[in-house]
Length: 142
Image 1 (spheres, rainbow, N blue to C red):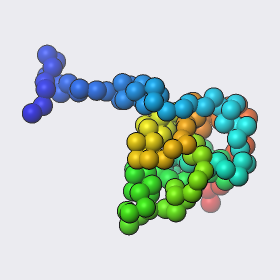
Image 2: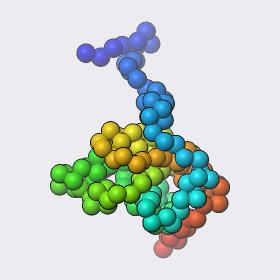
Image 3: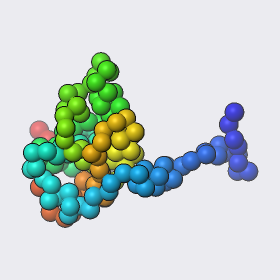
């Protein structure tokens, strides 16, 4: 049964801002400076949640593992037909998206699923790029 507000629009029990705030209260949020300091570490996997269009438009973090947000749960679960072995490794997983919202939700989901050493980057790839983190420029369009 939908809850309809006085304006005729469906009222949600929780909006995205509340979900993100709850996620941020439960997972580690790394400053962009701390995240840049982890770049290249053997025991850290940066997980880029942005979709392919964003990668083509904005570039990539060198060495990051690309996993669109929509496939995350399926790729984390080793029992899924889509399971990715990288998520079974004993590593620290640092999630990021464009601005830090999707990555907060993803880090919480990963933690809820059983990944123990997860975090996300405050401000996402935008903050990373602005702070001078290494970036592979997008390929020029032909």
